[in-house]
Amino acid sequence: MRIRSVTVFATAHELAKAGTLARAAAARLRDSGYTVQTVRGAVPPVPRWLSDRTPRAFLEQARELDQKASDAGLEYLSIGPLVTGRNPECDLLPALPDALAMTQRIFANAFIGGRQGGVLGTVLSQVAEAILGISRQPASGFNNVRFAALANCGAGIPFFPAAYAPADGLSFALAMEAADMAVEACGSAQSYGDAAARLSKLIQYHAGRIEPLMDAVGRENGAQFLGCDWSLAPHPDEGCSTVAAIESLTGAPLGSEGTLTAVATLTRAIQSAPARHVGFSGVFLPVLEDSVLAKRVAEGRISLQDLMLYSAVCGTGLDTIPLPGDVSNEAIAALLGDVAALAASAGKPLTVRVMPVPGLSAGEKTRFDFPYFVNTSVMRLDTTARAPVKDERLSVGRVPSDPKRANDADAT
Image (cartoon, helix red, strand yellow):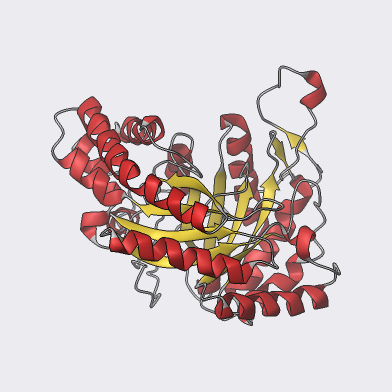
């Protein structure tokens, strides 16, 4: 098991402290035998730190934050949501492709759904346009790895690009790369229940080691350790494939009957394990990061609709999805709306990180040169779809018991 990231949540003025804290936590973990891949920082939503809500000011301050993150020794920095439930205006989204193109460490996100069950309908088209703009700077589609649309996601998620910080206070959390634990648990299991029990026990063991270490680091640095996101995040190595674990449990390729049950079982095992949970704490199915999933997509076994179905019971949503370069704004916007509606109806955090690849069509193979990606076939997206862009806020979630909360779609 690797630790993908020590993620520190701080204000834009505390990045030096964030770097010191991140390095201290990473050193303590490495001394205890754990591999830590990256140290990262995240600041509150853009409206909280941007002094002047103009594209020019946004670009200037994004560049400054990129440099401050570098000076602090942070490998990546999430600048938080450009769009929130309280600030649904989209005036900064057109500048986002330039902001990502001119920086090295910056990640960003934007809300497409509120924390209490709303779909931000008028935002969908603008977020889709930002995704298309990012794919062209440079014209490889790769920079979209640094942007995600969020639905029902709170502060304190340690995985990027979903991460953003609360309004104040210094805190931190760990993003785990735990797919290999699922491979171990499922490979030796006699049943679904046995696999769940084995996975839960592994999480409990490592949480029992990690949490006291991180609490001590927090006390020493005046920060709060929030916990770990024990999601089954994969690595391109086949021994770290979430899908390999699922298939060893079902005895059939991903997409066969029984897959949904296996995904739900593993998610339940993660969330019920005796540990301090943060973030998604579920099963991750990122197409370009999981070698077996990439293979199943290339074989034509898995569609976007399949991944949407599994998102209803698992983890982050639709992640690292390669799309045709000529995909329409309307089709992406409709997909964003569906994920926001699912997050609202299921009452869970979901994200969308899609990657249109200029020059490629559905079925053609990607050519990303990135050590944490596995190339696969570009996925198909229905080009006739339309999003509910005329609805400013579309209520699609569960009806709250208190009618006064019915219109509460505050994303932060």
